[in-house]
Length: 532
Image (tube, rainbow, N blue to C red; front, side):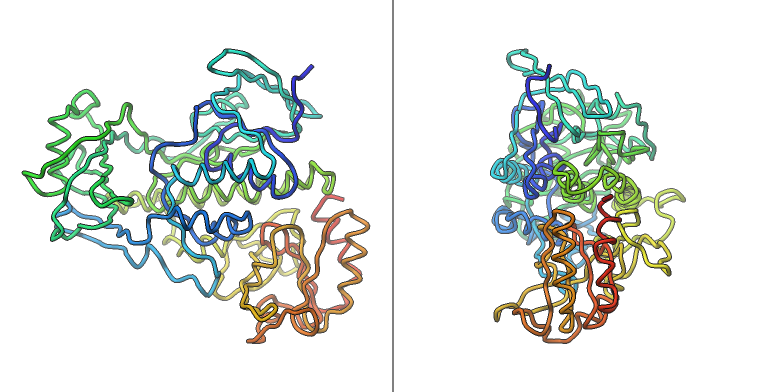
């Protein structure tokens, strides 16, 4: 007999677990989240949110909270010997590329220590329960659900929870994946580092003064490499050095740290105050799980992939794991979709995990000045626009067209609007205000149609009533308050003014009809996508 019954139990209150809880709640399903640590992360890391992440956060009502918590907007990323130089490379422009042709969302700059509490608060507002200092003792799944034994760490008290589904957001070291027998592959451990927080008034005339994140290539540092940054306050820095045969944690005395910091800054007599020293090594890895689902258990975040921090790929993808999984779990739990909808999670997200891991490894090796090697990146890295706005979903939750080549990527600056691609951004006007077509999406399946799309309102109403789902129709042009000033909507989405596009809650095109002749096929398309 279980002590509690929940639709979804999430193990881990990091970025992926809390985002999964948030987006489940947004779609009407309250989750139970358990976390073995007593709080969310207290460490300033995983800075920055790409605009596609900010779009998802906007949908959850969090865009403004993240912008207020952002600290990265004035940060430069540099590669060099020290803050005093020489500087090999500065990537200011690549840090914030202009993506306004693809989205109206801004870049975010919040660190994990700020973003996790924001997500936790919102998840609670949407009905989630979060239990800290709670660990998983055991779990067993069967055809009907998952039974999990939990232990309250301070008291030692045990309880049993019965869940329809279990989400493993417990990271690379978490035990759920291991107990499922899921292995992994990749380069593995790239290096181990120790870090220290310090305060110093760095001379303003140094080439790398101001807010900076530096990748140091310096033979006087352990292993010839280090990281140095002060994204939040000018005089407060985080500095990390690599451990090697000559440098182990016990070798990093206070005197040695001061020597290394002055080497990294490039000022031999710099006054330095150490404020916190790392207690154990941080491991930098390149690793991907061999699969990301086992029956009623789904892996997200670092349980799926571990990538070097270069480029911010890990934290951003962790949030989006929850975004893409949340709506599917919610619709199945509520009976609006059949269980096979969940079969689309792995074919849609797993290839992307491989792609992100490859990009993270390539960014890491470039920062260190190493050659990529055959298995690091087979081709030149994709630009940010293609990586985050051009990735396609190819699965049975998409009604693919006969001429679909199954390509995993397309150029979002030349959108096709075809099923499996991300719904393109088109500037529209609603009630006199400028909006993006993306702002019409996300809360449910949505049908977009043009000025001559009158038949689609009836077809959508019939489909919604038959399937018991929400299916709002937005008519662009004609009556209804939406106008297309540049007259580009139909061309961008690959339809005519009488056609329609069905968009999933994750902004991906599920099906389209180029004209009104396909209105009788809408219900069938939804049945195919939703396993109904």
